[in-house]
Length: 216
Image (cartoon, rainbow, N blue to C red; front, side, top):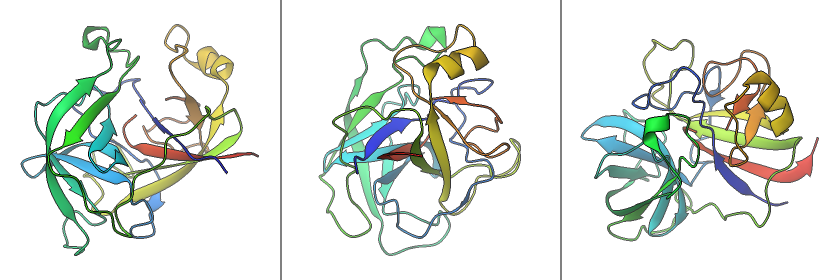
């Protein structure tokens, strides 16, 4: 199996300040997503990210604050899991092709360097980067803290998970004319279950996703 990582952008109708959303997801098995990272400003969760190395986190470029508190090994936001490690972000590198003014999330990628390398444990592990891109039909798994029923609801206290499948860019372009580029990956779930309160194929986000190199 080949694990891969991408971000569900879910840009249709969402502001840049919104945190990730896992609509109709289910609570993850605690610490089954050891690469999940929460990006905080003070006590406010702002974005999700994924650990790709002991010193580097991949997130979205529209998460543009100069500094974040980084929480790793987290499952419940309100209770101490005794597995957490807290770090402060340092150097950041935004994809040179990202243009915030366009608000289309093309090349919406940003690397954050961790101030102090994280200590790897069973609850904190990097997600290996893929050698190839996921193809249509590949089963994927996304995670994040987010509203679980309706856009106006509070964030979930516990990490949410949802299964999706990669769909072709041709299908995605038909659903979102003029908004899909070759730099994006699209995924779709069961009607009414997705990462952005959408019911149809989703242009590539807000929280980490990993895929397995087997087609359905």
